[in-house]
Image (tube, rainbow, N blue to C red; front, side):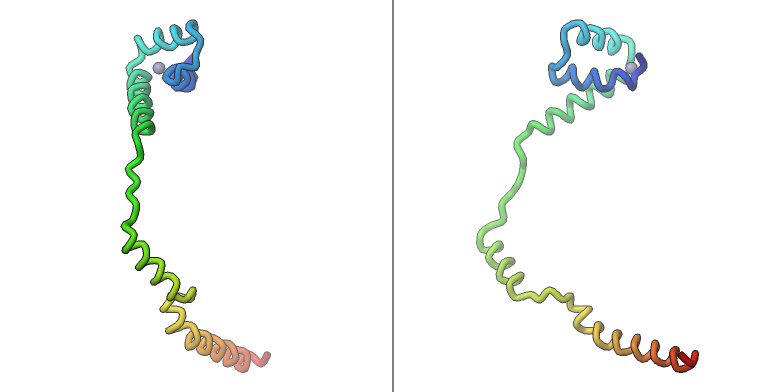
Length: 105
Ligand SMILES: [Zn+2]
């Protein structure tokens, strides 16, 4: 088996999901393969990071209330669209009509 084949076994071994004979096979491969040892070390470090408690910070209530109030007062139409949407539509329509007249449509 090549190193790619061992990758899944290394992950399973880290999780403790391998039977003893396969775990011994992985250990034997790791003993002679630096890239797989490095990959195993990275996976082990990643697993530790995943198990850490999250660092989610809740927004202070006054800030949350201000954001919710601002969102409640906002329109769904972006400001740029409100400012330039109608003039752009009129210009596009005028241009289209002009082109149609020039082409004789
Ligand atoms: Zn290897």
